Amino acid sequence: MDADTRMALVGIETLQLGDADSPAIIRKIKWATKHQAREQAMRHLGMFEQDNKQKSDPITALTEFLMERTGGTSRLPIADD
Image (cartoon, rainbow, N blue to C red):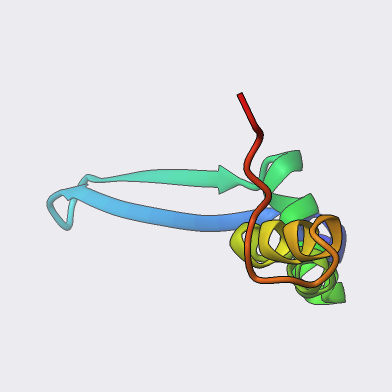
């Protein structure tokens, strides 16, 4: 089996049935999907860490937005009816 084929394998299971005179061997090979391979490559390259750093807390973002809109005061403007 060449190196590229081995890298695409996720797992191999072997089950031996029968007796010593007539063994029956069942092999189950699990291949990586494109999605799994892409996700593993992104984790290896640290791409998820960069995305997580870019995300902000929505409560903090809302608070900062409201502070900018109210001119830095802690009171929110109330609309007059």
